[in-house]
Image (cartoon, rainbow, N blue to C red; front, side, top):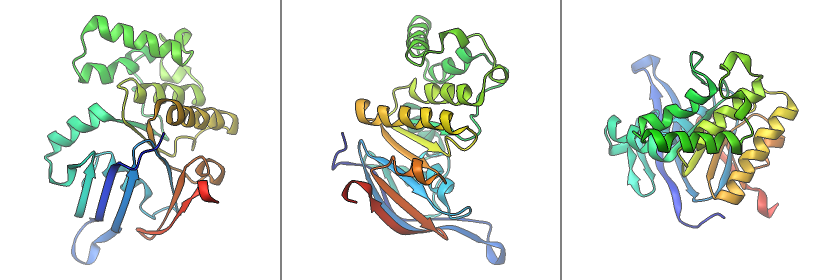
Length: 234
């Protein structure tokens, strides 16, 4: 379900932290197009800039230089408030550490993104009920994150990312803390969302087998793109 129309266009994106002698150049002139409906894996050693790149695409961070376009909009020129609005409306984030709110039940964690979007109470209840059913976690709705296994917590994390019906899911090491069977479950779910619902999926992973789920594999090295491999042409 991929499209030639890009959802992301990056042109010479760089990111550095600090200044002067202590400046750390994390990304160096990244230029990249990602089409709508693609499944992309970003790989590379620790410190190669993978998560920083994902955070810029997710508008959790902004580049030090270059241009980043999301659906044709120049996010590098936007205020933080504008970027947050686009993030909340179109992007679902899945983290390695789950990032569920410990003091909230599964139901409340799922409801939170809808509260940010000021969805009416009756509609919120319907949407949360639907996604609890879709992910087969109705029985877990009143439990707190600490009462769930790692796989169950990540399942809730994916469900929370999807509840806003995002155009993009950005997944930062989504299987990093999971057993292989739990990891397989999460990856199969992401692939199904990509293939059946047309959601663009961009994941960062150290796992070679899970990287191969991507239509393309982007390898970063020292903040630069080393290779881009299209898995569909061998």
